[in-house]
Amino acid sequence: MSVPDLAVVGAGIVGLAHALAAARRGLRVMVVDRDPAAMGASIRNFGFVTVTGQAEGDTRRRALRSRAVWEEVAPKAGIAIHQRGALAVARRPEAHEVLAAYAASPEGEGCELHDAHHARRRWPMLAAGLSGALWSPHELRVEAREALPRLAHWLAQEHGVEFRWGVSVTGVEETLVRHAEGRIAAGAVVLAPGDGIRALAPEIARRAGLRACRLQMLRTVPQPAAFRLDAVLLSDLSLVRYEGFAAQRPAARLRARLEAEAAESLARGVHLLVAQGADGSLVVGDSHEYAESAQPFSSEEVDALILDELDAVLDVPRPGIAQRWAGVYPVADVAPLLRERLGDRTRAVVVTSGTGMSTAFAIGEETIAEMFG
Ligand SMILES: Cc1cc2nc3c(=O)[nH]c(=O)nc-3n(C[C@H](O)[C@H](O)[C@H](O)COP(=O)(O)OP(=O)(O)OC[C@H]3O[C@@H](n4cnc5c(N)ncnc54)[C@H](O)[C@@H]3O)c2cc1C
Image 1 (cartoon, helix red, strand yellow):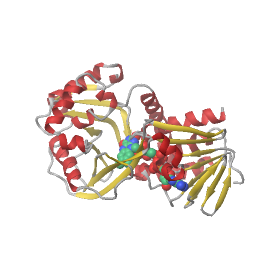
Image 2 (cartoon, helix red, strand yellow):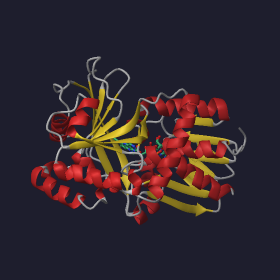
Image 3 (spheres, helix red, strand yellow):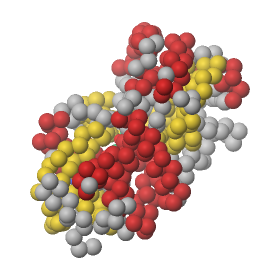
Image 4 (spheres, helix red, strand yellow):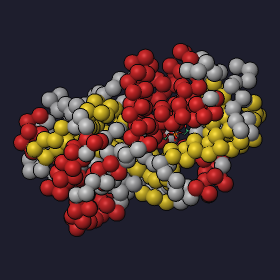
């Protein structure tokens, strides 16, 4: 490709979403990434495309649109959808009240509220003694580490997007992208380097008060064949994290009870998300540790808090752990999205919350529409 209409820096989900939106308009697109394949937050996450529980307004609207794009693109790109729907289980009565309030709100449309008895009949792996559950039909989940390379491959094959892997960008001047071994001239540039924005454009990062949020994740050994979890599972601690649930009136009572009973989990940003992989393993997380720069060291205590919550929610022996990893996403004073105009034809786009897998396709469409009309 001689001079691309658009150069995208970063082949995570945000970069690929911009590449897709531009390629669909017939633009010639080049994507540049410092690594030989995507290695950032986008392959370390749950792959949970979440609608229910997202903040009302822009985030929910973007999540609904992005979910529709995932539905459309996944079969074309050979990406399997492993789960449909989310199952929020309430351990405490206060959590059940939050779920009931959510179900009765306009955002609860399509969701089903279950008492504990019915929930256990439908999902027999749930522990006894729960207060109830809410099932949402709106979510889907992909295996992020498979989905990202497949999406990149499909963009190259079907849309002629050119990928330059292993090219570390050192700076951008208007539409000139400088990298360690030369430069790339383009008609327009989108910087989508995720947490890498702090090295690439430190002045933007400083102005936005960017910090790192580090999450610990686990994958268990495969569960027996009889264990089949068809939705992504969450629990009480998630209901005070996800803004759509936390905005419900009874959430204050739930938070007060969690502060008394689960202060350490709250302090370490622990909540429970569980999704089953194709091989029967469970992807389990996570925690949220905020710092200027992410620490390299994982905490066994944090993993234990996550697994204690898993034990409380599922009626299965604690599974062995096959893998542990950590991921980082940036957070900022401007959340959930930092989109900055760096010049007439240059934008920086960074998702500053844990919602990129759920919202990136819509964000890409918005940026490209604003830049190209
Ligand atoms: C553990 C974890 C779980 C999560 N779970 C979910 C979830 O279930 N649902 C959800 O919606 N969101 C989730 N998130 C958030 C989501 O993963 C992020 O919002 C999203 O992946 C951000 O995508 P990105 O493309 O901006 O960043 P990244 O995926 O980090 O991609 C940035 C890319 O830019 C490249 N890059 C950086 N600097 C340079 C440079 N100088 N030159 C060239 N290339 C460069 C990097 O190599 C990288 O490939 C989770 C995040 C984590 C960490």
